[in-house]
Length: 178
Image (tube, rainbow, N blue to C red; front, side):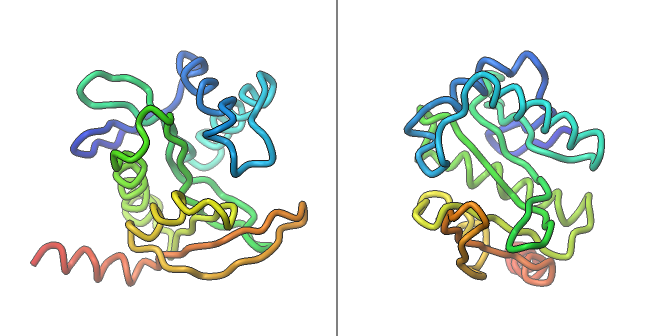
């Protein structure tokens, strides 16, 4: 997969991305809304899961790189996630904290939303996160997603869900074209 935005290139992750991904997933501040930061084995499982998603579905979390330099700054993509008992297409993102508040997560997620509808034909896409993760739900809202629900998952985490249906995405695109 290869997706370009004005400032970013999203591409399949490779083993060469492991160290840069490790720096993100093991960072306590970045992972503060997860039960805990990942350890080395967790990062390995994350990569294996990502590669498995590419094989099974043709999509997954892609490497987010700066177009100008090629630097890996995070991941963003589409994965099937268990959202309130259903396996749904979820737009997820993690950006290295050195690049926070520059709009990279919003830009990457918008491109992934477009891919979810244009390339993969989903009728709707979702983002879910710890209900306290305001930066993540604000990113979802910036991309046209609206609040769907809050619930406690089986592990006791309080989650917030946002959704964007294809019809609303198409309407927004038509408005942008005018």
